[in-house]
Length: 173
Image (cartoon, rainbow, N blue to C red; front, side):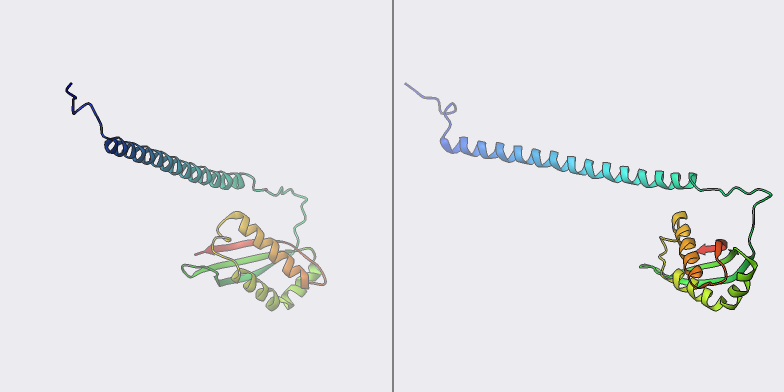
């Protein structure tokens, strides 16, 4: 009886074919896994990017607007001349150009503020100089700066307090 040569496979051929199938399956699985990782990374990137814009939008919408009426008590005001201060930055040199107006709670403290103007200007220079470019770019950073300045100035005033600080000029570049 004659045997057909093409219908019989040697054991070596079946092992080589099995290895090729395993390599193909592993390659396909790795490619699918890589696609899932890329899609997941892209989804995370776009979701986080979208949330940051929503937060900025939300913070713009939630800015409290003080109610002014005819009976509101506005305290004495003291202007603080323009500052130009270098701020912390990793890549380029940045600076802030700013002017302020202090609202005080009584007339007596105005004299003390004028006497302590060198201390006040020094405090402002030190606080501004320790801020980063990113901190001063958004509304929350500016509010934080106002709160820190008010606290620092009030720490050495004796006859009264600073009610509020108003930026009359504020440029970050």
